[in-house]
Image 1 (tube, rainbow, N blue to C red):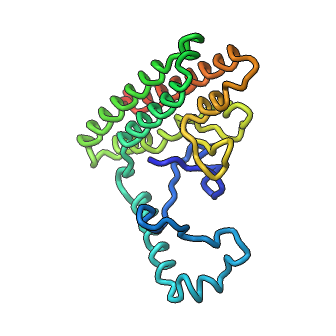
Image 2: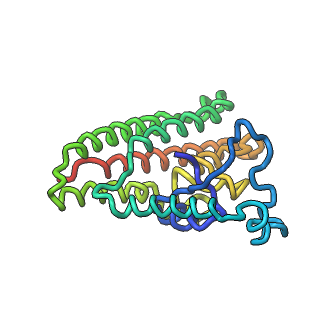
Image 3: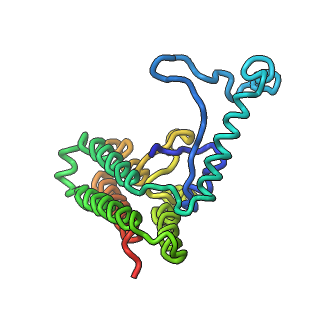
Amino acid sequence: INKLGSGSDFEAYFQRLGIASGRVRYTKNRKTDKFSNYPVYHTVYETFELVERFYDPTFKKQLAIAKLRGKLVYELADSQVIPFDCRDYGEALKGYSDRIYKLAKKHEEQLKTYGVSFDPLFSAVGNFSEAAAEFHRRLEHVDRKDPVAVRIMNDQLMFIERAFIDPLGLPGRKFYRHVIFAPSSHNKYAGESFPGIYDAMFDIESKTDLAGAWEEVKRQISIAAFTVQAAAETLKEVA
């Protein structure tokens, strides 16, 4: 699960409302080709004529992308059980929590001085992974002929993204309410994971009130931990 940034139609749905979103595209092999795959992006040369004459004269590429996206939408809408795997989200949360911790470790002395701990976040991420694994074990045995049982599981899958929404929004950016993913506050087109924690730590050495700055980091860690734990609870068996 990669980080969605901003600058596209999914922004309000995903970053504000917690509606699961994705970005699908064909692109070049970035490991072998070092140049831009679309160098005229957002220039005056980005015209219909350019596509018609050079990029896709037969429009076969356009058609292929349209068919692929249409098929994906069809599968999501028509599957008896929504084809989401929450275990992937658990893996992503683990990777992103490890990453933000490594950034914090650059200030190891201050972490000790101000009593900053990431243990609550790691614990919540572990609980989410366990809840996701147990959810999918139940999903394997759900009675597919029972519409209520299937609906319960689908609702849990559909609303898991909503569980990561904080109604209060991010500090200084109330429009963005997703606790796990948000556009970077320093590059709107790029995405950032655990944005509240990241923003609180950004350039923290230059802050005049270090104690207050690290208190804000602790507050953001607690918000993230609470939110991830709450999301884990939504995956538990409904009585």
